[in-house]
Length: 153
Ligand SMILES: CCCCCCCCCCCC(=O)SCCNC(=O)CCNC(=O)[C@H](O)C(C)(C)COP(=O)(O)OP(=O)(O)OC[C@H]1O[C@@H](n2cnc3c(N)ncnc32)[C@H](O)[C@@H]1OP(=O)(O)O
Image (cartoon, rainbow, N blue to C red; front, side, top):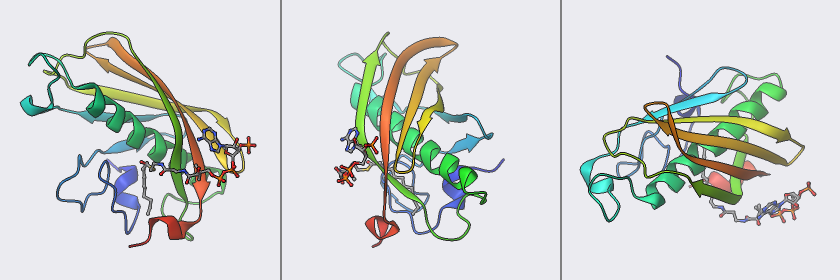
């Protein structure tokens, strides 16, 4: 299986860099229309209850998976394989989440994202997070394209 994050070089992101030892290391697939990410929370990712996932973690996963989706779609729109040629970099402009149900920590969490708008600099990504087929959170993220130098070390 090919993951978006493994095709992007020099990535330092807490959410998705394969090389950040302290990060979440999320992995997302992209099929040309939608992206999927599976994540299994650890017991310490709990909210006030040990049974449910901390909302900040949910936001972090949705944030990163959605921005990676915007990046994958932008490469596709330019007719390039992900990571090929000049780096395409997006950042989060806004993130609006609705927590619909407490998210079981037993997981796995399944994130699914697709674009509802794709402009020159601005993409709008719709993302859902489900567990065992139950929708627990949904979000809209505005991703803004920035120069590749934004991501340099
Ligand atoms: C190495 C491989 C990769 C590796 C992969 C890396 C994945 C990284 C994932 C990390 C995700 C993050 O956490 S990123 C970190 C958190 N985010 C940030 O730090 C961003 C901080 N904010 C900024 O730098 C700036 O405000 C920007 C870049 C977001 C926008 O500023 P700007 O450049 O002046 O934008 P501007 O020209 O005014 O607007 C352009 C268009 O975007 C819209 N727009 C601008 N800001 C917003 C906003 N906050 N919410 C909604 N929409 C907005 C405008 O209406 C306009 O739409 P229209 O008129 O064109 O329709």
